[in-house]
Length: 489
Image (cartoon, rainbow, N blue to C red):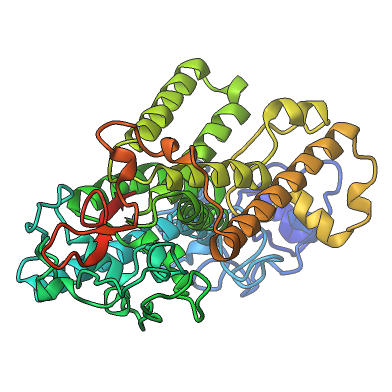
């Protein structure tokens, strides 16, 4: 009562912050009740009825006890703030607990989805289904069972060539084909026999290649005949083709485990660059050194590029990983086993080697610097796998291109020169390989042993040569260690 008399007699103002005023203070408070802009009986009180609080109102506004006696009160009246809804300086909403994840969290979760892996895998599955369907339409069975069984459980190499496998004879002139004294017969996509007299083994090169066809060789031609076959897209399409269920199953398993995790770490565009560049470079590398009669398909060159990124990440974060030596030995063992398996017949190890080399170079160029180097050049933050967003250095370079290079230590310059040199080197190598493939056609006599073992003529698989056939008419034909070599990548 004494407090009410004091306020009523000295200052007819109300306090509308929802707290019970204590005993009067000897000093004036500019934010206290006596300086309120509304009188005690004003309609601006926060109670639901617009009038002042009664004794029950104050009794229910005790701290630590929710106000349950005012069902009509607005929710914002119990919030610790001086603002009503719509009056927040930085927001138009009253403070409330979000029912779901924030937009930032949702965007972050969206970015963590490995879209490149998912989309690429979906395309590869769809293309493989198309291979089986086409094989079934041509031969009556989706799996090659004649003249021999495909151990990968899939279509014949002729169907794969017809759908875009890397096959050198469909991409440029080949010795033994364009300069043969007679027109060579080729297996048809629906061939199921080794009998060269079978009509299904009497197709033209253009019929075998498909995809718009190529210029067929002429009898007694030259290696320099024009126009040459030029289905250059066979360096790209084979990434999406596979030789069988086992082949695509193994590749998809590695892709969904190793590839998806790597894409989450480095971002979708870095991953896409490494994945596709490694696959293409692997097929270009194999096109120069593998046997020309081999039909190559698969995404293993791309996956070897991603494996190279895993090796680099391990080396970059060496001091922050427990038991790094164990991880390194395990990774080296996996790489060695993969390359040794590439020596078996039917595997194109050159594509594995090419993909791994491209992955190493692009990893040096695109990944962040290792921990040890960052410490020496004065960067305090440890190595983190980049997530695809522009880094602070990138933003600084965009704002101030010249100032970005000021004050850099010699070691920083050395590392960036190494990066630029590696990128220039791999681009030069790519240009030289393309030039050699189409123009010079230089061959390496010993390079074949990087993809085969000298056992039972394994290194002759896929070679194209013309020799007299053992037939009554001694007709010359296309012979190889097998009817047609095939590489499963």
